[in-house]
Picture 1 (cartoon, rainbow, N blue to C red):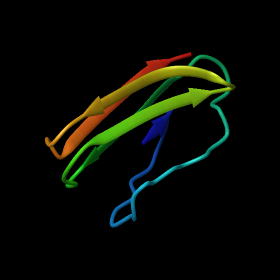
Picture 2 (tube, helix red, strand yellow):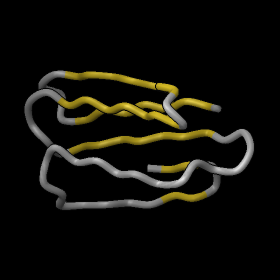
Picture 3 (cartoon, rainbow, N blue to C red):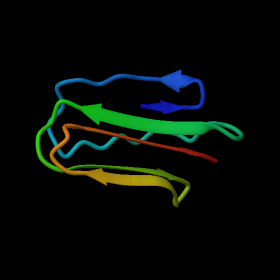
Length: 69
């Protein structure tokens, strides 16, 4: 996942997984992607209560969503 210039990777998490981080200062790109699971995957990016991106994918084992604020 990323917020502005900050990028992090997490592996081996138990689902459902959620990450909370402070918003980037000023306009920034936010993204999250997941791979390696089976069944339906969903991702949502919320910054200061505003949903920037939301996606759902079934049986593909990978998903990505991104938004800019």
